Length: 313
Image 1: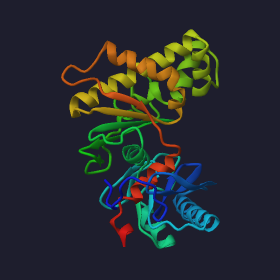
Image 2: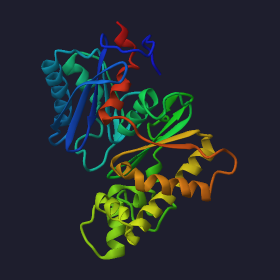
Image 3: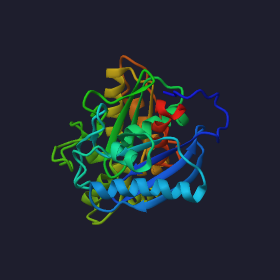
């Protein structure tokens, strides 16, 4: 994945930028080739596709001005299905109005005068973990992001595998995990058990307590609250089931789990391990399951910038 000659030692002569484009905020970092963050910042994203593009370009410019550094290239991660050939956003959620049909990488590149590579945000997360984090040295793996929703991305042969239409790896919207209605309109998707929002919903259904968040459920589980433990146990079993299916189909060796829900890894991690031990894959070994290690989602996007051949010019 690394096109720039580098022996793994400290690098400050080469700086890249990474941008995580969210529905309510944009986060950016300037980083060295060793993955060390040299500058970082966040700004409100505004409403609509044009506002997202302007926020991303403006934040990069601000960080460069404040730090005195200049990125040679930019990686960007954003939610949605993104065509790996053209960079066009093929599908986006309601949190990203006027995003579908745009080519954000081209638009940001025009504003900052440097090459930009865009991927789905979970694919960007995967690339960062493969270069600097829990999947470093892994050839075949799976990244799962547990946030408001559940996203997934595949590493095959040491490269991110997006599929011909950019939708590969989206484990969160596979069915058969529950009888609950998913935010996408489907029924029984993994997201209905393992997303942060779902944790709160499942707990509220069991206890009658409205307005519960995933963080609330995690805190309750740490005290031994039976309903909270059940919610996390169900989420862990769903995750383990998805991991077993993906591992069996693709012979994956490692899985990395990130996102806000992974902040409760002390609760979730042992339950996932127990579920995998109770019902492991039959034809392949149980994969290693790791908590994400990157300090910022924008750092994953910065890893994309290092893959741009133009950065060596």
